[in-house]
Length: 444
Image 1 (cartoon, rainbow, N blue to C red):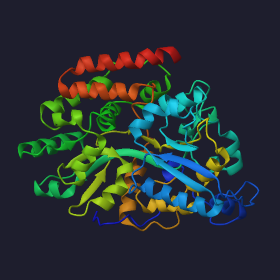
Image 2 (image 1 turned 180 degrees about the vertical axis):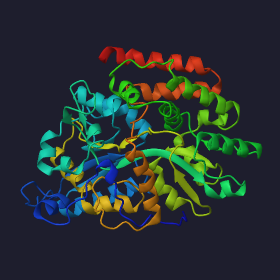
Image 3 (image 1 turned 120 degrees about the vertical axis):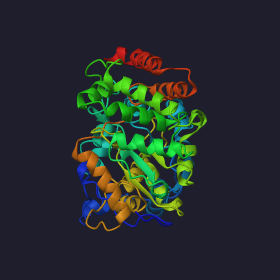
Image 4 (image 1 turned 180 degrees about the horizontal axis):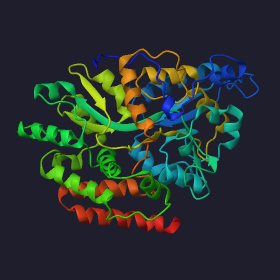
């Protein structure tokens, strides 16, 4: 792919996720797009304020789209938006208290999954949105695989029960490759695990640390999960995520992931510096041309397109695997202490409108409700191609931290322990089992 300053100029189609295109006409579609009331009559909220919280970067695909949604919302309702940006990590740690306090935002982006949105739904900290889904028709815009993460039962387990959030983009995790660095050392883009390890060894032999990641935050934990998934089947995913059967923490899936990470650290494929690195640090190493490989999510793609101006990069799925981390994206939720729940629903509806969804796609994201008639930009086509490879094999397998409320921090701490030498592979698996079973044994 040839990359340039600016966003990818295309509207993304995500048919493999059953992500449906919006109608191009009709009163219902127009009412939904305008954020008007359910009977089609525009409401005037002049003088009202809606507090919106999210953690997307201003130049990311989602940040660009949400800013447009705010602009439309203010124009069409007369209300003013008080935008509060935060960090993913900070909100992950504070949401249970924040959403149940007088300081709660009226509507907020929030992490999906049993351990996060599911937990808050089960304890009543975020609002049930069944009535809003019926009023605005959001269910018609979400396909299977996306609506799974929007619904939670009374125990906070995803996939059934009531709606508690609205995901309006898709996401998955894949390999970012610095094409110029691969060309410099005469290395082909890997298509097998043997190719990947041979490529990383070639970089090491030439004094280059090949794989940038973060053990302090999510990237290395997602890499651990991908390695486990490469040895797993769908039943293992259901056991791990949905508690259908006990997980064998001494089985091939976990031991392969632990052993492989230790091996890659020992060989210098991953630097010991990643113990103290954030996801932003790792992403910037790739963006700045300092690392040839970065394993992370589609949420980086729009930023890569806009920020990388002095080398070519390409993307591909992790080699030799059927299963891949991914799902519908983070969700808009309405905290129980929201002071403007009706305005919050109007705002959410605008984020689902064709105009905002199209901009999300044009900016390098994966919208759930865009007009799919014309897709011409080759960068957008590439992202769709890689995404559809996963969906064609029923590969989306959620994320490693979802099973327990504390597993995100638990997994990161074990990844840091692996990097620092505090855990060997066996001890890492045992510690993860202890963290996992402490919670799952109470709900299985």
